[in-house]
Length: 336
Image (tube, rainbow, N blue to C red; front, top):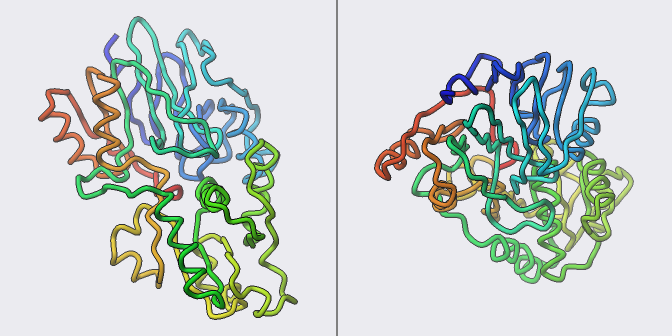
């Protein structure tokens, strides 16, 4: 079987004709296989959804009980037959519940990675390299300029800033799913034991992470309108980046604004967001990790999607690996 006959891009997303299913479709379809819970990959309105239990739980938290008509939870490593196509989910290391999806028929195996990272993160299961004929990789940070620093060093900048400016409230912008919990976990790993205040938009997901055995320590609401500014002096407050531009952020004493994102390597982005303390902490691979992963898996062909596709395609060609861009649309950087 040719790879294009097993999986091919359609307007709704990657489609498997033999199995009659889509992977991470961007519009409602009859059958969707979902890699992880970020909104650009996991949308509501599908008839049937297959994903890991944690991803299904996260979709339910974000969209409500009726996010789909029927759902099927898949254990990592188990093989499921879908209309004669073998489907298997493998850890992606992106966020809690995230998975790569291996699709196999007639001796052809394609692995759709979704979003993935290779750096250590105790809040999710580490990435598992899977041998395949075709590897579909994201390229969010698919340019040679992107070399992400050690996240432990980056989180240490917040702790050092607290020592330098003990009377300032330290606001850390972090996306609600995955990044916020990772930032909190990194702070705990570095010995920060004080309560961490969180925006209301993070409560359900942080509670869910804790229910899954991810220890985030004591978390307190930062949404109490009766709380005085003085009570947040020297405190760490974590919230979605969008919240820092509204009235919610005005309740904090002399706020020092930070943002945890791989895009904080780009100084212009930090300035545009008014970020005083950028933290380069990404839930995606940087350039060395992308290229090392391809070398490790050794696929015959690489398909590159949602990101800096051309540079990674060119690198593959120089390495003697057949490659092509997919030009899929609708995938953003919610989990950067």
